[in-house]
Image (cartoon, rainbow, N blue to C red):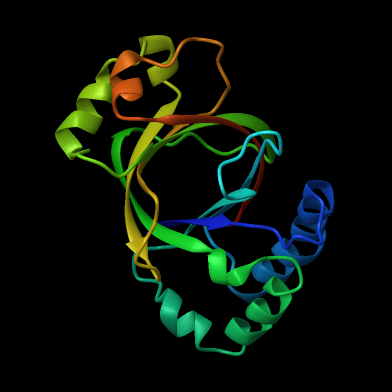
Length: 193
């Protein structure tokens, strides 16, 4: 199963200090407890206001019980460390389900482009149709996922379109019509087997 968390830094951290702490302190701590198959931190451009500083992606085998894992000593240790640099009460998490495309193998450091589709009248058919309107050269490195709130009741997005390389191409009209928010991110990935 794959999950996404929208994470906001504490106000006493600059975007650079937040990223440094996340990469050098928190990510190694989290990886030491129960390494996911994918643990990717996508840092939003600080000049763009989206209400979060990092979109974190993490994936585990389908039989992994994340709630049971967090009930071990790892849960309080991670929560304590998160409180040092994250506004935990503002974190929002969703479960992601693949709709279209194939996720590409993550690169340890990469520039990526994310298109966040807010909740409205979006349904799977509209999302799939919008994906089919993406030019083929972009679609071959794209992945569209449907998002359902997890551990929260108010995740602000219905879907996420990920492009493994940023593009200068215009946002396809089908995604514009869905109110998609385009965001370039600096991505740091840890892949565990």
